[in-house]
Image (tube, rainbow, N blue to C red):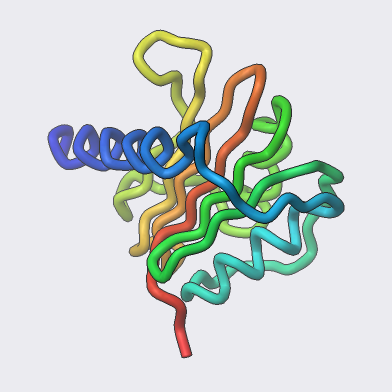
Length: 142
């Protein structure tokens, strides 16, 4: 169990680090981040438990591919992202393969992971004082 959890944490961190390199380009957007994230997640098969969530005004860059959406939010919005994800999907449940929020390697970076078993897609969210990143992993559903 510990090995599987560690493997998921490492894989999620690699997706964030490799998928959001400084040289990458994407669509710059601004406005209410919450419906954008929930729409991206639903397109890939996520099932929120509620659509009644808070708003989060922000600026972000979106990169999409056939297998993932990467949303890089300017600034420290980790607590707000964690709050709306908790409203939409509940707490990350270890019994379903998700990983509750924790610090990454003793740094100021925090990360949480929702598993496909819990919400229907893989969703990794991480952040520090400069950026918050959300990666939604899964093929789009018809």
